Image 1 (cartoon, rainbow, N blue to C red):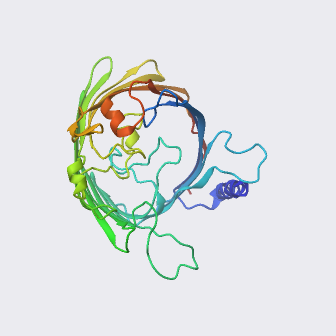
Image 2 (image 1 turned 180 degrees about the vertical axis):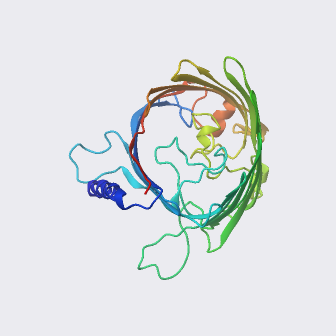
Image 3 (image 1 turned 90 degrees about the vertical axis):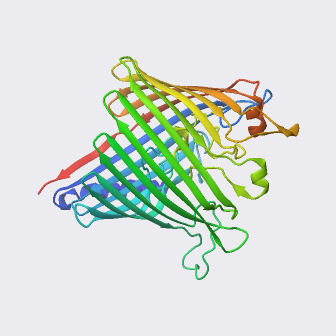
Length: 429
């Protein structure tokens, strides 16, 4: 790992030394990010119990990126190291941390309208509901993909293609069976058009997942329509998603998500009232092998369903779907600071069976979550965030997630973000 870092720094220094020979009207940018975050987890993602100790740790993301942008092409490289403080001894010869290439892509511009982009990249579209870079998580999310892009007069069009495979070259000589928990292949079309204050996006996505029981591939399709309207004091938005096809177990999928919000900017603070409804699967449909649970497959779910990540963030809530009624606001406390406050009311989208009496159902209410985040800009490239969240859970939440709803379930965190631009050089010959 240390040799890899030495190679990376040497390569970037060498790259910066070739500015003299760069193409006309090009730009080289080199930047970094150091983002340590301390977290106190006492009921994060799932309910805690009275005899369970809270977790405390510090995780750090370190990124170093170089971006070269010329008239006809662009190349972007983003390397990262993700580690828990203390996970490696002070004197060591091995390293348990994650060091990887987060992004490495090239883009070629055929003309002002058409371009193609290929390599390892973050896919982040619209509000990141379905395709998001997962920026909150230290490791982020990226795809190995090929894009064809079009842009003219407020119209944007992206065609994306991906094919994933495991194995080692040169011994990979036959077969395409894919054993990872990821799509085997994926295709999507994203269209976006602005009409003044009105913006409309449409998405058609298809992914194929390897059915582990045999050599077949199950295909699931997601369709979406996302209109938004923004004026001086108001903003209105809606999302309509529908999923069909088969999941990785080859079960039929019939799921949907409906979401809407309204924002009004007062003299003191903006107020946003919204509701999300993600369909779920009840016991009867599950026994028939049906999947009616909407899956926000590659989105930044931490952004939507409460910051304590009880839903859709790497953990299950028994496929009962979700109704989320929320109120969000942000108070400006100074020229460089603000306080965001979110209130969520969570409910199951389908009946939840009583584990003590399967013939009866529990109340649909899962709980109420309060999220507070204080943000201050300490310097132009240095920020500080302090967060506190608390979940007021019900017995229904306890039934689907485990733990103890009557205990104090909270989460607190502090994060520094250093994001300096190390070099920005324009070449005009």
